[in-house]
Length: 516
Image (cartoon, rainbow, N blue to C red; front, side, top):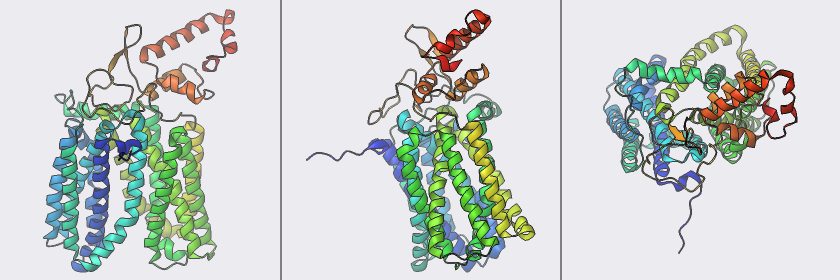
């Protein structure tokens, strides 16, 4: 009897383990969240103050994540996953016997910090568990799974709380962390400890900041995500007011969450099919445009007091979920494609924590704007801001090519389970710890690899026009080594220096005239 062949990244043993751990952990987090809210409000009668304290305790560690990321990059990802899941299991069991809101908030604060550290280790483990040409597909799979859990988790959590005590649900969530420990111990591949671990802490911390702000693509992506997430949280924090304003009962809040989750699953599946051929920032701009139009329509409906059937609104929110997938998949794909493995923890932490700071401020501003201009006007303002963001991203960054794997990347069913010695391909995610691994070209000369953003920036600053290049030509440019880029720049400089004698020849060159 022939064995069933598993397609895509799931064919790799380590990614299957990582995928299983992520799904189980995500489901447990939703169970935990429902149980914690019930415990605070109905058992301890903590009221709005208790809820605010617990939410703040879960959010504050995000601000410290960039400073913890240095310690994560210094350790093997597998060991970090095992340790953080093990301690989180103990802290979750502590919630079973917590006597009140303040004890629970303290446990949630520490557990959230460890969860952030584990999340960074998970991103590093992703890079070493799959071949470079499957990082994007793996990201899509994980995003689809998390959107699916978003649908199932709250419903299952409510069901368990109805038949069990909230404290029993905490015990069930502790078991999900133990599943993470078991799967992490079974991993064969892991990142190597940083060779710079003996450097000063702040110097290593600065490397992450330098990489993000030294890369045009990452710098632009960070700015876009800050703007985008701030606007999104303006209206998202007012969801409890938007649903009744549309003429629906409060029970539809849960239905809306499920509709967004279903749309996210559908959108992630679509992205998985076409993402490799799409320009990342152009895709993001299209997603933001669609979201902006939907939010503006909802705002207009509230301002004009137009009544529409609830089923129609569920369909609209489903479309909102589909549109959001273009952002949720594009963001990690660009971050991974532009970041060496040894900087993954620090870069990923910075790219996520800076927008999180703004997310804390957005609900406060939203409440003030609702009191000043009204809920419908707030949504119209947010929709207009999203449309302007979409236009700016499309104009300034729409020409960035797809985040395809480097030329010559392995497209086979998987990779060797154990780390290999020698040079790794550009942005490969291979388990080496050198920022830019030296390699040897066909002529035998030593070269140094640089990221796609570095190459694009160098070429653009020298006056090369990349907007008319085909995808195949851009793929060739992405595979160039630094020596090859410098030779190209030198040739251009010498041609320009020759003046009118030769400056017109490149225009008739069908193989590379677009560069000039």
